[in-house]
Length: 219
Image (cartoon, rainbow, N blue to C red; front, top):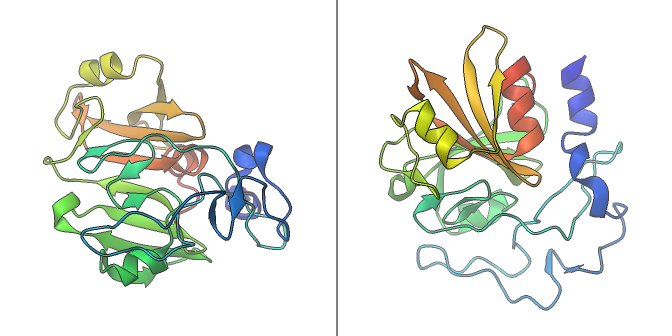
């Protein structure tokens, strides 16, 4: 039941600034913020105009996506934040990443309509990417070479994670394991913990990350 509800409103908490599916927010024009130029080059390849990631998006009952003028967290070329890492900005289109040859192993997610999975480049720690209706929803980093904007990474202690993100909260999954969730508006970093240390790091839209971790719902 929760998966069905989540599929109808996968990012419902993000709808405060959203418009109807057939109207564009005044802050957006042709898929990018008003007045913005084409997306910056990714690994030397220009991402086509009109593919700048929507800062936030919600799903209407008919399956179309709304746009929001909300701004995502700052993104760095080499530091993971709740908004993504390098060219893997939450909300960026799969099509633009494919055109720039920044993804491999693209496949439909098993058991999840409208979801697609892919693998990012090794330069960025080969993140596991999950797209919803062609836009990046969240990502998982399993490489010890990638640190967050606060310097946390796989192997960091839970104490350091809590120190770096003191406003976060503990989550418990359906089998009793714990994670630390650091919110940034509608986005978040999630740090699953094993034996007192970070086992992996996830970044993306907060609600789907939380549902997936606590209830094993969604993709």
